[in-house]
Length: 401
Image 1 (cartoon, rainbow, N blue to C red):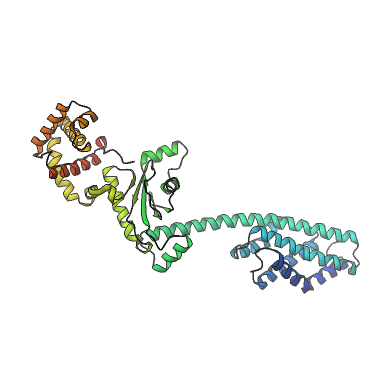
Image 2: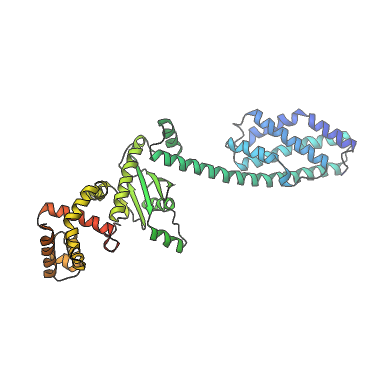
């Protein structure tokens, strides 16, 4: 192919550059035939058609197609069209159509400038090579921008969830996010806090699973069949639950604390409750799905340390002064309380003879003055024993699953 000094080629390229019908034909055909282009402003389509024409003229003048990474136009085009909601399929189809219009005009003009058919064939081959390079670079740009956009979207989503649950958003931002993430405004939601037990996180790492609290929380939601927006926060995770968990699915290694059911505009109050629930669950060694109703009076162990200290001093400390035997007495008391005050069942659970259990309960009364048949003693002893178990690894209250 002749170089840039070829008079016929120079004249041809000058005619192409001044042929405004190329631009208008491209705009009309794109908007009429390529999905997604019908709603793009005509000026935007004209601008890209001009860029395509300039790129084609430059390629014909150079006599070779550029390497994909040398073309800047795909980046400009993909950024603009992605922001306009046009798919990459339509963008590439639109570029091919634009090349077809340019080539059609080029072939019409070639004979007028004395260029033989074989030169026209060279032009066609060169422009389609340019189309291949453009397509290759467009796919790379789309992939990179899609990844960047996904990362940015994920970051925005994470920040919105965190700010929403702690009550850090004004009403406008809260409602805007609700629309974006499809949260209900006409029914209650719950704030959620979750942590992964250290041993569960280690086990997940050993088995190739995820120890990330947000991922584990989302997996639980999917298994439970509930809608939940989650985000990492500190060493745990937070979320907004949009459905009733009903009979909650197991959550191995997770403590999932549910706040109160509230309107989305009050989710910060629900988060405060979920925080207290999580602290109480940790205090008594419970895992799984927990809320105020499930923890009941156990919430007071964490929230009323003065009461907890008083009851420990009254119902546990005197027994522990007996040394190892004192722990056996507390074990018997725990079995008795945990089996509905049924001595045979309690004795079998330890296991000891029923008379042994009765003797240990008698010693508890002698040491503390507490009567295991008195309602107030039973309530206080349950509180104190649960607090003791929570603070003693060897006697943790059985986790709730």
